[in-house]
Length: 163
Image (cartoon, rainbow, N blue to C red; front, side, top):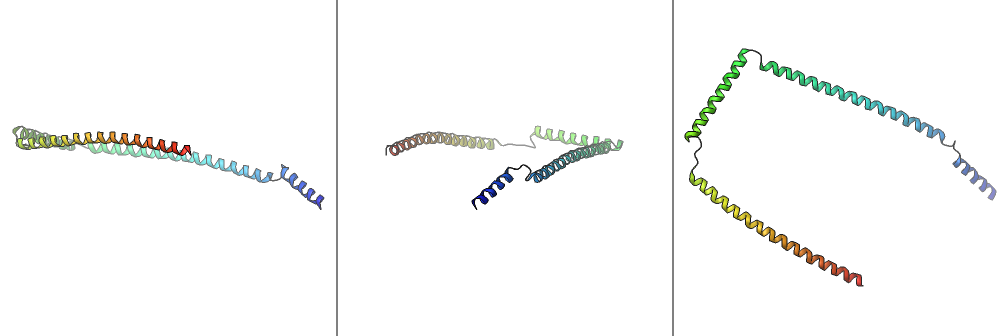
C-alpha cells in the first residue's frame, strides 16, 4: 500500500512537471489573445477614420456657414444703403448723448451725494483697519497658544517615556 501511494505521487509529480499537460489550453489562449489584439488594432484604425471624417464634416459645415454669411451681407446695393443709414442713425444718437452730457442734462450729481459717499467710504476704511489690527493680534495669540500646546505635549511625552 505504501508503494502504491509512492507510485501515485510519482505519477502526479510527473504530470505536474510535464510540459505537454495543459499546452493545448495555453496555445488556444495565446491564439485568442492574438485575435483580440488584431481586433483592437482594427478598432483603433476605425476610430481614427471616424475622427478624420468628423473633422472634415465640421470643416465643411464651417465653410458653408461662412459662405452663407458672406452672401447675406453683400446681396445688393439696397442692403449696403440700409447699413449706412443705420450707422448714420447711431452716430446721430451718440452725438446727441454727448451734447446732453456736456450741457449737464443727462447726468447731474449733487455735491451732497458725493460728500456723503466719501464719508461712508472713510468710515468703512476705518472699520477695515480695525478688523485688520484685530486679525493680526489674533494671529499672534494663535502662535503663542500653539507654542504653549507644543511645550505641554512635549512634557507629556517625556512623562510617558519615563515610565
